[in-house]
Image 1: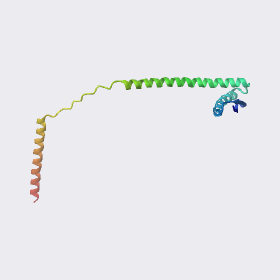
Image 2: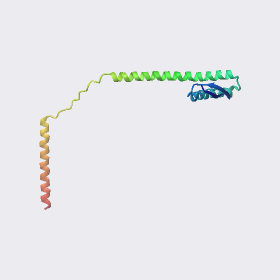
Image 3: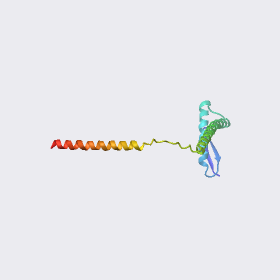
Image 4: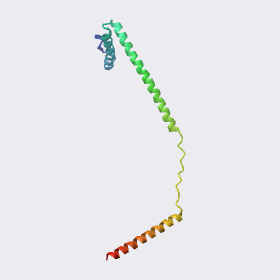
Length: 134
């Protein structure tokens, strides 16, 4: 079991940890050291036990606040998942019937006749225009 030297609040401690966990120990010690430095900046020099206790309590307070936020987010996620599931489980909406007006055949025939007359008149006009140029 390796022993690691950590510094908290300007004091060095020898701490044992499992093989491969040295990085985690250094990270935790850094967090504790940050809180201990805040205390020493605000209060001044404290006895070692009191400094460690207060720094630990400050970290615990931050952790409790983060746990509350995590719980709130987990509740929000559960709510959103429930809403998603409810939407996915809804039956498909009834298809809407769309009625398209049908043009009666007599109107279509009349329009075709008018178009034919218009083309015939256009042809006559082109013929007369062509004769007058000559």
